[in-house]
Length: 216
Length: 226
Image 1 (cartoon, rainbow over the protein chains, first blue to last red):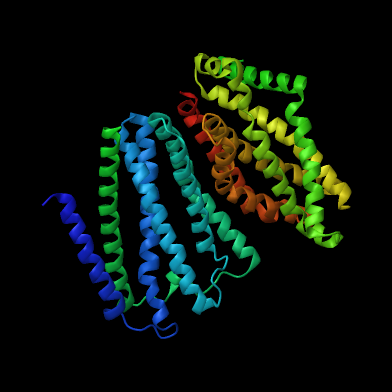
Image 2: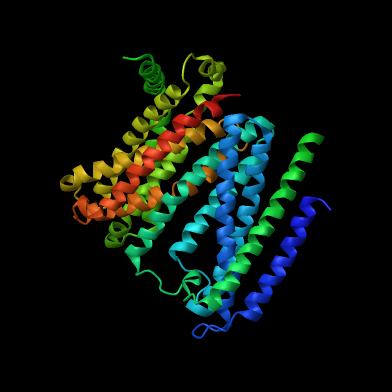
């Protein structure tokens, strides 16, 4: 079995273990009830998304410095998966928010700043789709990938202060549920599962991109 | 004057001269700004208090929309007569070209913004005299950030099909922090608060400006390459 297959099966096992831990092992949270279990998807997905955007930055800088297409494939693959996990984060936050806050969407600082990142990297993918020449595509995308990553802390602080101005910070956010060890362990299992899944997706996507490049 | 500064200056001077002679961008942008002002008025109704409350947001929305048009065009002039080749063949560090283009865009945007602010003050009866100083600080910091990313992305999208679509789609999400900071600051300034009280926003703007300009300087050569 190739290393990638092993990684894939490890990811499957970890995701099953994560689901088991989140729905079976973890106790029912007293205040929020079963709704709180969405945290086991919500928090790992955003951690994975940030990891992905970090890799977009790394791949982008690597490409501009070395001009090796492998770096560009890393950035492109990480961006796609990062957008996917950001989407999962926003959707799960929204589903969690409906029974908890009574609304599908609220301009909570964390949801808002992640939504902005979602748009930044969607723009990145759009740009990639519109430039045909591979070298130009890689160079332009790298510039956007670097700017997008460096912008993350700026977006974070600006959105946080903006919310602090309009309404007091929300006490109940998915990530801020009181974390006893009974909740922390399932969360850790899911975090490992999501990271493995991400690594598998990344390896797969980069391999496909490499084959596409060779075929072209 | 060092050779680097001279090269940046030449690009700036060329752009300003071309603009002075054609007045293409300035005229169209001023007309567009007046149109925006009317549209805001129609969209929100004639209630003066409501308009005044919305003014900081409308003002910066106006600047950004005008910026989308003005900045987006800033490299179109280079596409005619093989000017792009000329820029690429220019000797020395390519970031000097970025600096010159950025300076030209800042001058253009500032001119449009000053007129738009004066019109807003006139139509919505806001006395801008006493707050002119702090407002100018916010205006300068906001314009630098907007133009820094705008110039970089304009150079990129000038070479891409669907340029008109891609430029705003790339620029707007990146500019969200700038919009939040400048609108909050403008709100504070117009309500008579001293700038010192919102210094965290000023710091954020200054840091963002610095980061955007440095990234522009570092990466511009990769965009100019074709």
